Image (cartoon, rainbow, N blue to C red; front, side, top):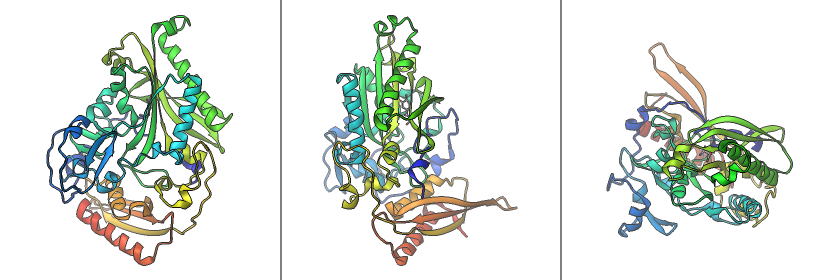
Length: 434
Ligand code: DAH
């Protein structure tokens, strides 16, 4: 199992790259099916959800920020929908709004930093609905049309125009348009991904934005961009210091579609450089479209799980979702960095499976199948062998690690899970088992 130190890449690689690797093949060939039929293929904006008639009987309904959302609004048997039941069940859990949960405790500590350093100037939004339009999630923050993050392989689509937000940056443009100039947005975000101790398809991010007017930078004698970049770095170095103490830090130049220049902050923690957040000076085009042509702004985004795993020494990302009292009782409001005491050393059980892949096979689709069957009992899915024979057929061998955080699993139970995974890989992904 990975230790917290090994989480350098947790959920942060999606927007780094300029790479235009859109896997078009994933679009049509995606064949997850649910027993529900499609009710509508039109876009599901929050407003529309709010106006929707209460339908009876409903499989399940939840409420986010006063909006009622039914399961069949989110999970549908439609080629433009790739949201499984397991993901629907996470909507509305709002770990970041629980004061006794490590994610909520960390959020509050960051809010406190901003409140005390900026005299309560930063507004906080932590109840914005995670169902957003493709426009909000991608177009409004200038994610290129062929960027890999837009693919059905990486993002959960409710329909062709509606997604589960894959980052809190999805709310930047709208809040700017509404006139907010200092704000923090915290929320659950959703990404189709591989399975290991630092990756989970739902996690939490915080976004921060600060807008400056000419008065702010003119007095300094600096140009607007340098002024904003300097202020951003000062603010985030202070935050890292507050959370981690006086650690060594470094700034790394990088790329994000929404900022220029763009940076990552890394801290030297437990003998490793740990990527803490991404940030930069907001692209002028975003400000211009929000009616703020004369302003300059900075923005940052950070992953709360990644930081909480380090600060609380939580070894596996699945634990955040545990309702086991042996986990939940270890944390209390305002107590940042209490070290988690593991209560489970249950052994993992490994099962290998080999199959011939087809052109549309992706590891993320396999992981979705495995999670659909085993839920949080799956700890890791790892490609351990891969070859192409003389006929051009490609074989993959995956090793699946099953382990509960809370109890011992029986052989019988694991064999049944593995059997179901094999069956569903065949029927849903059309792979040929070997
Ligand atoms: N949205 C980015 C991600 O999910 C994180 C991020 C980077 C947010 C830079 C920002 C930013 O606002 O300026 O990877």
